[in-house]
Image (tube, rainbow, N blue to C red; front, side, top):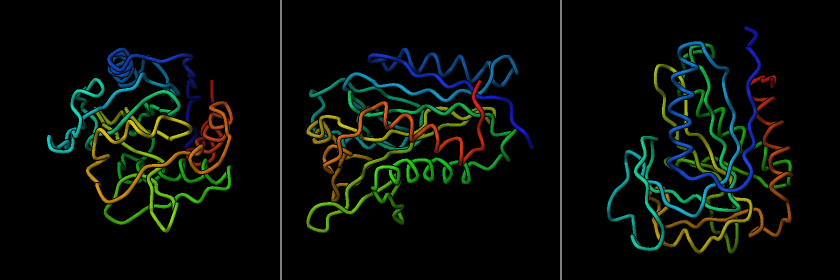
Length: 215
């Protein structure tokens, strides 16, 4: 079934978290009402932690390090900040098969294909959310995160990919509740890809995986 064009939005600068959350809530309602197109929104946030619906208090290791925002997305604690590309995915899943599991798998594929553009092999791991890479001394590190919510079959929140964030900020939490593994980024892997480079690759991945056209 042919889909209507999706709005692609790339916000400059750093978007405050609550501002983005309010914008998503409004857009979800508008998509559900048939008053606005689906939206793929690329942005960066100021340095902060978000606590998903499964967040455990003990996983916030340094509660005074950065602002903490409780949010309605699935998952546990995660970090957002400059140098990390966040992609909020506001799609009408009624038009896309009403299959949340498949939707999450498609998001994973978007991250994997994007990383592949830069010669990085991103992989799933049983029992762990997100996308992982083999890194130093055989260690497995997380490079892409996924946390979504669905209301009236409209998705929001989405994914993040670490391009060149301050990785020391991840020390303030147990990312996604997984303590025994690390976190990495394209820069940490020795790549000099810019945010614009990442956006171009990510846009192509979404077009291919979801069959998107953009307004």
